[in-house]
Length: 333
Ligand SMILES: *[C@@H]1O[C@H](CO)[C@@H](O)[C@H](O)[C@H]1NC(C)=O
Ligand SMILES: *[C@@H]1O[C@H](CO)[C@@H](O)[C@H](O)[C@H]1NC(C)=O
Ligand SMILES: *[C@@H]1O[C@H](CO)[C@@H](O)[C@H](O)[C@H]1NC(C)=O
Ligand SMILES: *[C@@H]1O[C@H](CO)[C@@H](O)[C@H](O)[C@H]1NC(C)=O
Ligand SMILES: *[C@@H]1O[C@H](CO)[C@@H](O)[C@H](O)[C@H]1NC(C)=O
Image 1 (cartoon, rainbow, N blue to C red):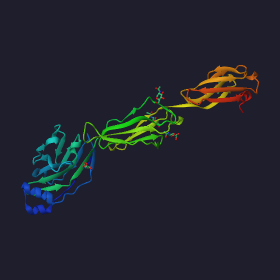
Image 2: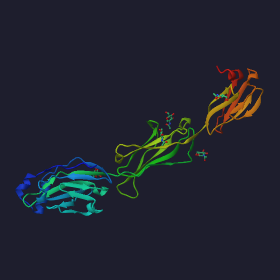
Image 3: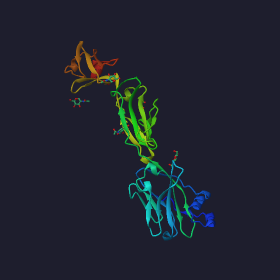
Image 4: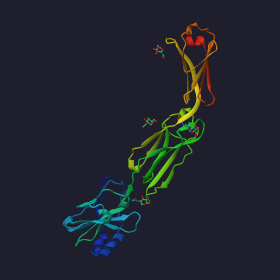
């Protein structure tokens, strides 16, 4: 964020009556005259902000920039600019040196950190005029979390109809914590999982969040389906990060079908299932065979009223069986 945060100062007329240069009376003015507070500026840590203060004649005034940390009652000097343009910055605002720049009525802070969170304003004074105060600008700092990640839980394979926690999506060290959502396609996943928010172990003001992917009743429709973890954070400025995770679902053979290629004379048996099923056949004439495909060079010589029977099995009960009449195989319609 780089837009000027303060444009005007309102003179505090009662102060004129006091005719002050004395610092204790300046403090009284500061309390007596209500300063306006502007809208909060939200800045991502590492970025910069610029404040403006209008000064009638920079060569005759002392311009002070003040800062009150959010967590503190006390204000502190951030920077001074004296008549003639001599500049001084203080404490955190000079760490690393050159981090802040003061020129005329402008105060720019770069490489913002959480320690810079609080209220900023300017004060001008000169020998002839009493102190005037600029509006207060609250500055709120967002911290970009570390790159989100998904950690698989278990061996990546789940049994159909068995509630299983399969992965954990996490976003660490953000301010505030990120928002996590597991999606099934375009719909949020219906799940009993609750996000877990905790303080980051390395910092008092950063937050971790994690959310498990729990499949309450996995079915074959969830086999290799990409579930997405959406990660939202104000520091991403509207971008939504997405991570995919999928698992294998063990399921018994379904959708078994027998068909023939009447040109090549191959007969096929196919079924869906995970792991891939193996196939056994009972052929016309009660011959046994194995494998998903058979070359039946005598397809057109077989008795039309006999059966092809195929069994698909992948070790997960139940197996699947299909039967078809030789005639129906030869002339499917
Ligand atoms: C100051 O702290 C409060 C409480 O932690 C917070 O709600 C508020 O946003 C903070 N203000 C700024 C300017 O960061
Ligand atoms: C993976 O875990 C599931 C359920 O916990 C188990 O049934 C299966 O045998 C395991 N598979 C492998 C390859 O270890
Ligand atoms: C995901 O969506 C698909 C399609 O709507 C559905 O068949 C499946 O059961 C869903 N899976 C979960 C875990 O909700
Ligand atoms: C994640 O899954 C979505 C579908 O839900 C797909 O469009 C996207 O390409 C996948 N991304 C990656 C990196 O695999
Ligand atoms: C049937 O077999 C022929 C000859 O091998 C091949 O060209 C054709 O693509 C096959 N048809 C199907 C539907 O697989």
